Length: 265
Image (cartoon, rainbow, N blue to C red; front, side, top):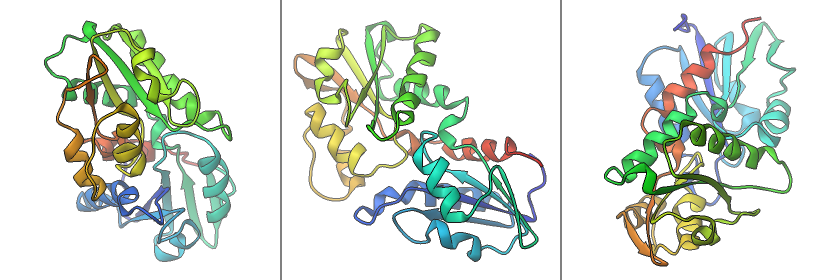
């Protein structure tokens, strides 16, 4: 990597006012990168919890700052909210003697496909891929089609490898709905990977409930252990469910790669 020893890295996540688990991956990745001693400063910030997007640039002292959105898709938050709250002019903002470089969201990383495929393999290691219907689950929203397109893009990329019998997208808030997973798929074993950043309520509670996986009360981490006893016998099929991709090992390296790809001028 280039020399970032005098620069700051800011990782911008969504966060939550209701679930502390939502911001945990962003903070964990920040801590992991901090331990690498690559940057003078490493900070996490959020839309829905402290420190806020609008405050974080006052909390770092470096004259050069790299901001990486820890978001799956390039949409409303990465195009509108973060630039507005941080008062960014574009890819490069020069203000008060500082240079702020705004990088692409981590979900755009070209190696995201490999990370998703690795996760699918890890949660069903002994199942031949040609017996698997692989489902990537996204949030989906009528407000911004990029949310669903990020999932569709990964589906196309994985399908193009020919590794799996079926590769399909499903969503929480738009069709095709994840609750209908058994109608969408045809293979005897279904592998479901949540294309989410955090192990928050969506990936630890909402999706398992819609799949029919029984979960226990408690923290997201506790519930995750409860439903990850793969495979589950559901609706006459075998179903294996993975962790939110943003919590997978190696994810921090994708954030670092987005820094390397950041605009230089």
